[in-house]
Image (tube, rainbow, N blue to C red; front, side, top):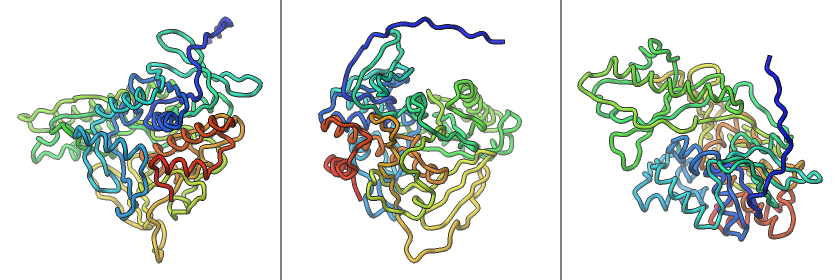
Length: 449
């Protein structure tokens, strides 16, 4: 039987006071902070990792999807995502693949440094290697967050807050309602592997499919990407850690370890069955598990699968997207892709072609993009809190399209703008004027349709 431990009551020093605190330093969080800072807000940002960028850096996911509609003709995404792509181009750290599914391949090590420069260059106060711990409420109002780092337990006070933590840790502690499964899309541990292109006629993916069970691998499906500036190196995301709730500490620990084991098992298959005169090497493992789905919070509006797949417009839209619905199966290997033109593809296992079909009959005219409304980020329980990122309010189908980075980056920008306008006007983000937010986003380079 585990005994409880009583923690002594203590007074926590306030280490910083500012206008806006962003909890979570993914690109979504950084973009929220940068947008607010450009509008004159004093901003602090907190992240548990040693770098900014979240899944794009610590998670090693180096793909950003198209900034155009599904026909590749109409620009639908601009703002800070486009700015960052242009910055990376100056160092040959991004490749334009000109496809909807994988438009940009990045060198995410360069992205880390660019995000550092953005944070510092905008006067944003960074707290890396810092864990958010708890909210502070005074007379029912969020006034500070408690954090812990090498300097101990401290408080950071602010007027407005953005939860960009991915799992919605701050929102959870504030009692905001959320959904959590069942059927969460399983996470993946990414790896950088050298030498796969030099294996000649040996099809390593077929070998993994045929012999993976000998090394403790389940049947599975995955993808990969080249890395700019690193010929011979590939980013690979080949396995899933099934039955994982990454918002649970014990399950997350198990999944991180299992993900690394799976990568080694793939390497061992290639070593055992591949050509003996060819060398492959495991160059890097992601510092963080690639979490696809955990808590999704109930906001003022829930984005639906029909909203996405039929391209329904919103008068308070703050983000546009064209990435397909991408559902990683929770109960076994495979992925289901649904497209705005009504077609569907289901891939069951690695190395096998997809099962083609339709999820709906043809329309006279297909939509070419979808939208995310501001209402998916705002709620009424805590007036000075906005949410941004993958905890947004969406049903499972809509979520499977909205969750990719080029879409979530825009939610960060919108949350940052909404908070900055609230600070300027002496109000709270919950009372945001959607049209003012849209107009300000457009002034800053975002595309409002």
